[in-house]
Image (cartoon, rainbow, N blue to C red):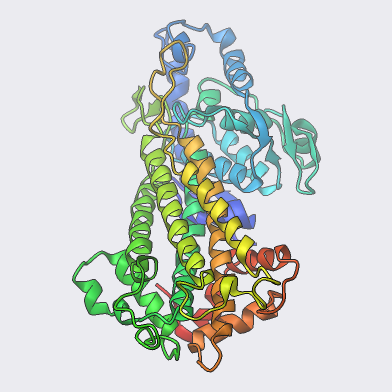
Length: 512
């Protein structure tokens, strides 16, 4: 099994995906263990002094004014974890919790948090054992870190709360630790706070969304090309020299992908045949501009994620010169903004895809295709309601595009008076990514049926490869009405697991 070694300088997006989704093992580098021990010496020295230090010998948040005596400090750290593990609602997905824990471990290993090496080792052991703490949907405001979600993870390290074992059953965390030979952590000064104060949940969801959207944007370029082909559109608007005039890199990449899919098509270039038209509709002609803008948004979000992956987010933080300083690095605004920005791009990509689907189904705009791509229009409804489903998804995506980060709600007796809502932005983006997958699947289903109905014209080699792979995946072609939901579900899986892009790339080479 692949092993990810965590050092002091952060991790990569591929590391996060390997641990969260593929169950990769985690190990601490010798450098990380040494940094953990060195920063712990600093915290121990401060704890022995009479002067109060936030997070070491004081309360937290609005209660930071109280100096805590040495005999109560272990209880203080246990109490912050127990009291902050106050999440509610449905359980969060396993991959999100694993990403959350791994990213917190990344910050611990930076040597900037002051926790003992055994705390980090225990977190790695829990990940390697396939134990996943139960984390709930609600409880993070995206400031002072993803507090409740991280607290539920910390609670499991203490042998308390509930967790899911590698077999999928939920049991008391203490039982699962014991069953895997893992000793529960007894927290000391600052350690409870250090386990809670990070943007790890929203960052983990951002990293996974970026991976999913990278595939979906290539998939959407393919379905846009298939729709253009099915509508007998022109591929002249995809010429590289036209896109060089407006040098957005995402736009150029999207146009190049569409052009590669359409190479050798016998369907393009017929836009001036029976019913001459000077230009294709915007949803066809402007596909690279819209998808390209989304691609450039992905590039910006990826830059933010890379910076966060290299960061050590904690409060207070142990500095190289030995100071332990309070700060505001736990504020989730940088991550929250790009999560919201991506949700806007997702909604717009889905919207333009739905417009192309509707055009394929409308006999007045489809340039010779049967109404709703039905076998016997009137007797058969064809894909009429498949487009309804797609439209419902697009409407939902528009609601999910309303930014969470534009909202703030004060908490902690006005000490935490401005928050990012980044966790909420991440949760709705995950829903949006699922919705976009389904929208692209419906366009794929409609466009391939439409291409097959263009008798006497030969589609592009890449299109023929998609049709072959799609039919082998159990997705039916044109014909009389049938139970449509299974076909749409199979098309969704075909897009989600990357087989659409794989089918094309076997002909075109790698898409951009």
